[in-house]
Amino acid sequence: MLRYVAALCFLLGSLLAKNEIYDGDNAGLLTAPVGGRFALKARRSVPMNRLISLFLLIAAARARNEIYDGHSLYEVTVNNEDDARILGFLEERLGVDVWAHPVPGSAAPVLVPANVRDVFLSKLDEAGMQYRLDVVNIKELLDLEDSMLAAAANRTSRSEPRIGLSFDTIHRYAVVDAYLTELASRFPDVVTVVSGGRSFEGRDIKYLRISSSNFQVQIKIDHKSVVVAPARLFLDMNLAIGIPRHAVQDWAANLTRWPIHPRRGHLHHFRGEPGKPRRVTCPYPACFINEGEGKSEYDRLMRPSRNASPALITYCDTSKPIVFMESLIHAREWVTLPATLYAIEKLVIDVTERDLVRDIDWIVLPIANPDGYEHTHVSERFWRKNRATGYMIGNVCMGVDLNRNFDFNWGTGSSSNVCSETFHGARAHSEPEAQVISDIIRTHGQRIELFLDIHSFGSYILYGFGTGVLPPNGLTIHLAGVQMAQAIDAVKWASNRNYVVGNSAHVLYGTSGSAQDFAQDSGCTLSYTYELPAWRNSGSLNGFLVDPEFIEQAGFETWEGIKTGARFALNNFRARQMLRKQNIFNTQ
Image 1 (spheres, rainbow, N blue to C red):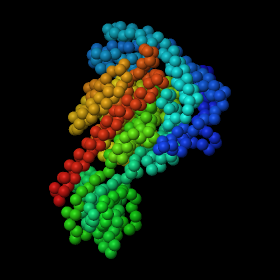
Image 2: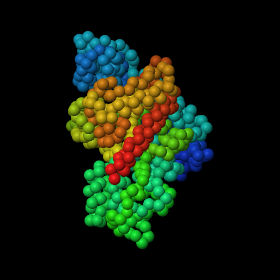
Image 3: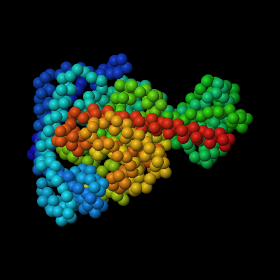
């Protein structure tokens, strides 16, 4: 009955709140740019509507929280590997929720339902494991979180219009979805919104591509006038991008026979020199050759000629590196959303470091698990997985842990139990939400220089592989991770501990099928999992619970680490490209 009450209150509150977002029937979220930035439209809201909306949303949240009434939060000390295995066994058998698996010598927060509390504690006593009661009834903290967030949202609605989305509340899926679309319409020269696919329940999974050059693959030839055989240009250009030499040579040898000349589903086409269709020319100080769809005249322009000297090509500059970040792959980790929204604001709206957009292309996916995220607002605050059904008769248990669903070492270090929080699904990439992320990684391949999967909580920067084996460039990955951690530590709140950097299996525990490992294995040079801190409010809200006071701080300090990592990635990318260019011309 309480769930029906919650659903009704949520629906009414959402409808009223929705009308608060827009200014007029045809208005969007944002006004026209003001001084290079843009502001939310001033709301002409009716005060009574605002009060009714606030009341209904709080009522819906409190009804939602009833399922957690009597749940207690314990801190369980894990002294060794045996303790960790016992805790994992109890999690699987009793359905307790281990919020963070600890390393030996630390404590794990464990949410324990009232109906299994006695059994859980007796098993800990039998094993000689130490524990302490941290929160008697978690529902009280959930009610406190809801009240604080609702009050912050109400203050925002009465305040002066600001730039972009506010950073004193946690925004719902519909608000973020509309925001991404509006950004693309207001800043078409920099921002493109992409629909990567649909979630299990049919929600649009949108991400932004932020680029000053529209994500084009570019080859720059520094010569006032270049005339060169197309076959040689084709060869050198693709080698510079990073295609294996034997593959490019095979393509070049077939230029005379192929009607079109593909490279990963695209074609390169050039300006033909007038009167000399067997050659191409760049009669400008710098000629940019962009990747695009093929044209009918492509074959005519690309007929090879051996008359031109390959020495005329003196310099190739490949495309910009890509930084790809995503958040909320685990639905309950609300505080990760401000991190990606803050990055979007600093890259598009409040741009203070323009080199980050000029020299780097960005992909930002704020809500990777929209179904699960909405479910945490409506029904179960601590829901982690997506909302996939069909894995159990009657759907008594449902959902897949998306961060165990990727195609790297899938199924070896996760659970085949549908009821487990780490259930890995039927097969790798079985879930549409994981497919969106894997498609982005596969599409952009080795151009993704930095991948960030943002989670909470614990203050970690982790890298692969989850098996404990390090990637070949493990030392570089660790160095970049340390620099990101130092940048965050320099501006973090003093009450939070310093970030710990290391391999995920050695610092925490082994994993399989993670987005981090899949990205690393797929050619992304630097791949990490961020675990943001668990902010405390005078000892009350902690773990996954969010105090509005810390939302902007979460975005700010995480951005310091992101931009440090982005600049490291850019320098690393340029160094590799320069080395590749030298190798190309040394072999000519």
